[in-house]
Length: 110
Image 1 (spheres, helix red, strand yellow):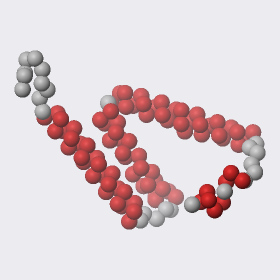
Image 2 (cartoon, rainbow, N blue to C red):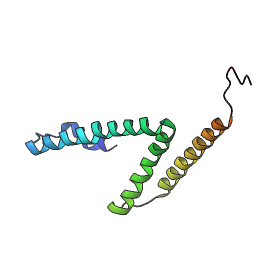
Image 3 (cartoon, rainbow, N blue to C red):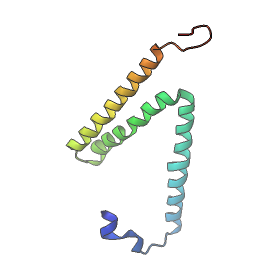
Image 4 (cartoon, rainbow, N blue to C red):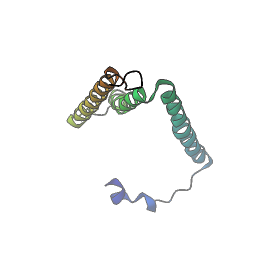
């Protein structure tokens, strides 16, 4: 809705040297390094735990926004938290259920 009203593609902007450095910093640190660190972390702890930590990111972002930026915590935030925690519980339950089922192999043909 914001983009329809203000049409940012019509705003004239020529970045200064500092503006270009800011864009480069955001691209390199905010995207390339962050993604590389995340993928290395997933490689180290495995995809099961990696997805659990990935689900925690929006919760952390919402808490930081409320605590440090003065944002209001609404019912929609609470519903989002509930949905995330429900997904975490379902994934954790599924992982425990998989671990309890013995694997079928040559020595154990169940």
